Length: 163
Image (cartoon, rainbow, N blue to C red; front, side, top):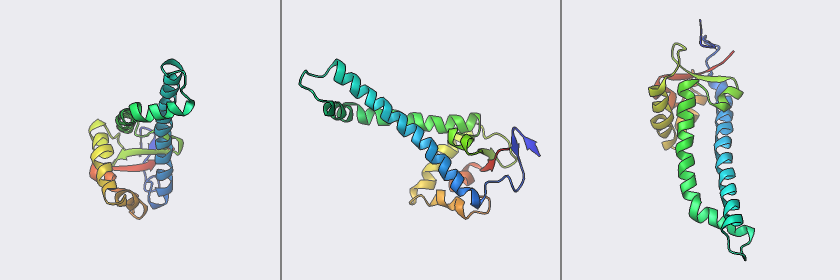
């Protein structure tokens, strides 16, 4: 059966052998978010150094200023944006940039789109539940026959390969 670009069959399910692909996709997504956070922090520190720093300031002061005055606030903003990224991309396309790069997609049991409610549940409560016990809920996907982590089980989703 073919639905929305997903070839749905037992072979399409990203089972235990797909755990490494899922982990790599998550690392790609986290690298994008953290890299953007660092870039914006650096740029804000540079703007402060050029525009507002006293004449005796040195470049290291920009790092200190960025960490003291902007760091926590910027990290909070990027935590919210990161959450919105995962929920929004999963709800709209069933995949984030990392999953797209590695040919994976999140789908419901029959291959249908996830939708906003399920994506919100999977990417917020589900990820918290999966990570709360030393990340066991994520690693669970490595030995589950369908390759589903606790967040997938909670939301009724599965990660499949896209053809």
